[in-house]
Image (cartoon, rainbow, N blue to C red):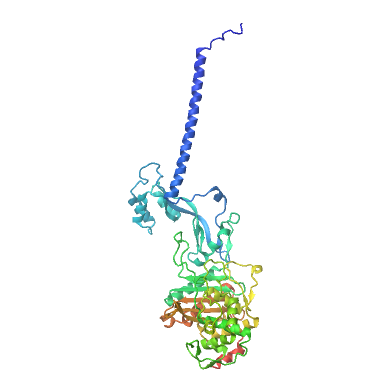
Amino acid sequence: MSAYAVPPAIPAGRVHLMQQRYRTVLTARWRVLWVAAIFALVACGALVRIGWLGLAGEAPRRTSLEDALLPPRGEITDRNGVPLARAFPAYALWFNPQAMGDDGSPLVRSPKEVARALVKIFPDMNETRLAERLASGRAGYLRRRLLPEEANEVFALGEVALEIPRETDRHYPQGSLGAHILGYVVEGEGGKLGMEQVLEERLHHPELRGQSVALSVDVRVQGALEDELKKGMLATNAIGAAGIVLDVDTGEVMAMASLPDFDPNTAGAAGAPNVFNRVTNGVYELGSTFKPITVAAAIDAGVVRDLSKVWDATPVQVAGRSLKDMKPKGTGLNVPQALVYSSNTVTARVADELGADKLRATLIDLGMDQRPFVELPARGKPLFPRGDWARITNMTVSYGHGLAVTPLHLASAYAAMVNGGIWRPATMLKLEPKDVPRGRRVFKESTSSRMRQMLRMISMYGTGRSADAKGYRVGGKTGSAEKNAGGVYKKTSLVTSFAAAFPLDRPRYVVVIVIDEPRGTAASSFQRTAAFTAAPVVGRLVPRIGPMLGVLPDESRDVDISDLRYLVEGRK
């Protein structure tokens, strides 16, 4: 055959088969393109949906893969492991107007009917506002916390737009107990106030999540403190109250309460009422509770050596003012008597002889010129006289006027005064023995020993008798001060306080109680002073918390005050 020969013709049937295969391949290619186009449209729709949710409402929290693999936010417990704050699975109620997937109404029934049905499940919801929200078509949360049985009732309504996403929620199993200590958590923002804010990084850190943090508080002591403080506040019709129990050797806060309080379970992005912490953020003139501090400084400096020495107790004339005793006990008193009878005049004269520089240095050593030393973010700035103190300033500060500090300042100062003279910063975290700070010496050990005797005498013979719980060797000092408003003292508004320690033969704990604006009631014998308002709270509290803290009543032992008793009894 020639090289230029014409090839044989292709049969007609074979041509038809090749054309059919081409059409099939072409059809498959178009189908792939359509599938890809559909996927692209779905992706674009999803992006538009996400953007719309970002503008129209808060999207329900979906757990990312990373969050799913990580443990939830760590627990906060008390010193004995009792949970105070924990994360747990919860349900929420989310309104999704696009759930039906069309442009019609997202609800099967009318918004009013659905709102009426939801209010039957959640009686605290407002039916009118709920109906308006459903009618608006705006996506978002209708409720953040649902019980399982409530979720079932919502599901039974048959409304597809009412979604029930499952989320991880922060729960406070003790309710409002320790609210000012704990604070609360806002979704997407983290901890607010309290230790939730302080421990935010530690509780949420990827490598530490799931680990619990133990606080210094004892939930049993906390409960007793809040209960007795509330009773004292209500019995005197006071506007507020504060209390703290502090370990004198470690600075650990065993309990801290501020009233009125709030429930961290109901707090959210809008905040919560009564979040002001009167223990660490409220600054007050705490009156005569400062007198023992002044006397301790004077004993330390050698100004007070002979406790039998009689000091002039008549009114002090200084800078055009007359400093007087509320209830004069004569023209002359020795130092133990001055503390027992709460003499302003003798305390002022002791401070005058001590000198402003030394008293000021002592108060600075006790941290009273700075915000309180504690982890909590709410820490009030003391109203501490700056510069060189005038003579009148030194005298009035000596008995707690002209200087305003927090109750925590006072508690730490009393701890140093009775524990042998060592000041340590307060802490909300449980400490191991090796972690207890060394602190700094403020008073001599001998001075601390002498002050334990005199504090005990005040509870036995003076204004603190209503705090003298039998067998617990309580000692402390009352304080009543008029509130300063705009530079003017209001005689009708008092802040009363009692600072105590127990057991004083071997001090372990300080208790400070402050009552804000108590009224004279039948429960307080129609008196407003600390002896009738704050001190009784300590008298009821100590027997409740003593056994919890390992301090049992023992009436066979007490502080040896035999060398001082006659100095006080001689005036009786």
